[in-house]
Amino acid sequence: MPPNERKRLLDQLPPERRQRLEEQLERYRNLPPEEREKLREQLERFRNLPPEQQQAARDLFRRFLALPEDRRRVVREEFNHLRNLPPEERAARLESEQVRSLYDEKERQILREYIQLLPQEE
Image (cartoon, rainbow, N blue to C red; front, side, top):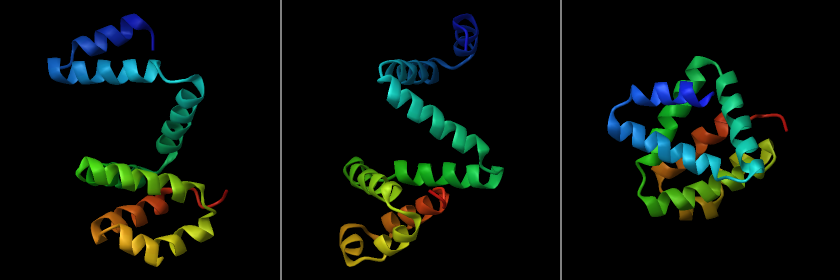
């Protein structure tokens, strides 16, 4: 987005929202190029989801953000682990004794819904 258009859009936001967005943009600009590319790909995959799956992803993200920070960190690590597993191993991982002992039911439900959003062919 051209800088003048970005400024025009930012000027329309309430001050707190504008500040948060500017901070996010600055963090994005400071990422290494490969991380920015990864985020662009994730956004493209999200945009290609049907509207109901986009809404499910938004709801899931809100529930994830409602977790305490220390638990979000642990659940995020599990997201990364699940993402790297072959699709056929993801559900088995979630049913494992290790996962049951590490995560409460609410966290396991978030993880189950997360794997449903992942691509099934890899």
